[in-house]
Length: 352
Image 1: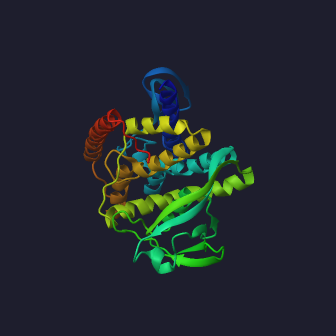
Image 2 (image 1 turned 90 degrees about the horizontal axis):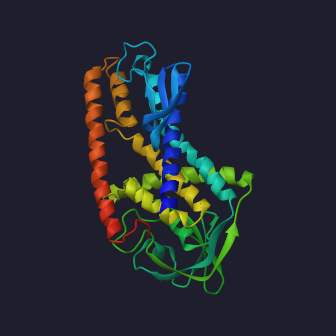
Image 3 (image 1 turned 180 degrees about the vertical axis):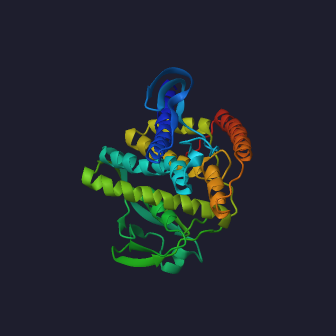
């Protein structure tokens, strides 16, 4: 339990500080006055002033903050609100952009660390009638060898490639029971009937083996970039699926993330880095949502000013909207946390 708490806090601090450092760097580049850059939340333990900015360490180790001069007040010299529309968009979005870029580093390190990989023969156990798999000629007993040029080592990799290409034709190399290989095209469905899956197959495996795998630096870097981009595609596909399948997203608050952290720790450093990368991407995208109190909510006001050809919403009204949004988010977190605690008490997990 103690290890889970320590790792969760370290993970949270890393991601929030990455986000806040993005705002800090963008503000400095845009000549916006940064009043304070804090690690943790007040009360303050220690601080030092360098130039116009106080760099502080605070008592509550749950992230950090960047306090900019005049976020809604354009009359203060050097304030964020006094800068051009382009500069404000840059400063407000920089934190999320850095959260979205951080996974490239995390995935790269993860791929370089030796980690366990299950290698198995991925076999078709059953094919649903009138499914994309049946239409493509896939039959029970077939072995999936490749998808879009990617060698399939286990069932997880096959599911990953299918989810990555929902609605698009994918090229599969299948090995028939007589060892003859065939190349076929399959189009995974966005909204399959209940229990059928995107292609309409049930999988099984044979000859599983766990091996150690790692990449060189020169292999890990491009793979880290590619994997980060693919995670963004998976996120987009998941959002589209909410609407196509009329399903609600599964929400998780800090308590659920802490629980997941404890479960991922058991799998090793490499999976923990990948988990941190996923949380970072989610944090970056979440902060860009057009909701008051978030960076995306502030960006909406900047874009409204642009649409209105420079006519601003009054600072008082904008500040009130963001305050209401902030307290609404807090209330939402409390509600989600209540359900997270109830789920944990019942012994349930978010992991499959």
